[in-house]
Amino acid sequence: MTPELKERIDTLVEENKIMVFMKGNKLMPQCGFSNNVVQILNTLGVPFETLDILADPEIRQGIKEYSNWPTIPQVYVAGKFIGGSDILIEMYNKGELQEVVEVAIAS
Image 1 (cartoon, rainbow, N blue to C red):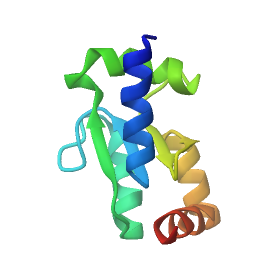
Image 2 (image 1 turned 120 degrees about the vertical axis):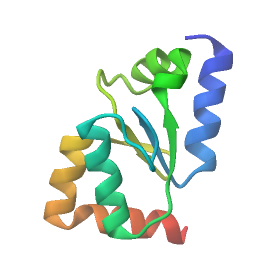
Image 3 (image 1 turned 90 degrees about the vertical axis):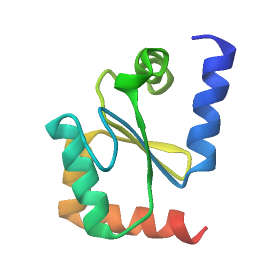
């Protein structure tokens, strides 16, 4: 990964309390896993930003290296990598996700 790409991803993750790297965007998810993440975050009623990795091949590959996580979507909360669709579903079902995002939004 180039230093420029790392800096670009760092900026996106740091400047947005909740950042989702996904296929499509929050208005038009392009895969079921990305849609799951959008639906969960919408249910929680929290603001979040998305980046469509389909429109940006450099980030599509780079984000996997950045997080050391092979799949998309990838969710970052308060600058920390949380996981993908399955992890978000599990955290949501346990009531953990709401707590994590509320702390992030308040900080």
